[in-house]
Length: 195
Image: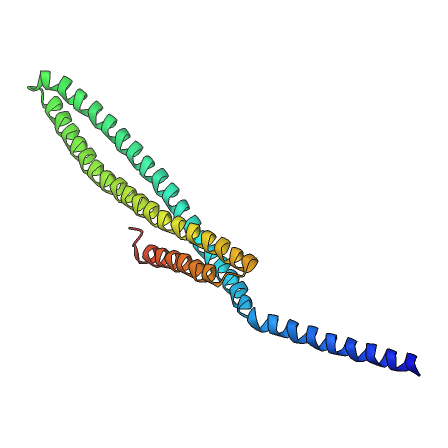
């Protein structure tokens, strides 16, 4: 009978310890419930960071494309200048025999072509400068988005440290970095990339 009582007491003690362990586990879960929210914010930061990276890629491509197009326009401008110069040299050579009616007619044709090249060059220059302006603006927007991505990376790292160390202030710090990243994204979105 004593063995049965001893076993019963051991069983009662085990149940008490089990209840205490469960209560401690529940208390710990209740105290650390906020860590679920930290995990959700990390996911949110990662998603918004990937959106910023996507936008940044778009503006990086726009910067490169605008630069290539501007270079093409400036090359076209140079080609027009060379052609214009050749007509000017030929006209100068013809001016030595200005009394001949055929030469006078040819000079007028050359004058017309030179004026046409001048007009083309003005338009080409405008187009090239617009493309350069677009390139510069896209580069500025890309820079802001790059800064946003960096802010989100720091926010994710800080929130992850928060989960490891269970230090709640790190979570708030990560939110500050994420807010700075969102502010940079908004500032970038409000900028106009140009024509």
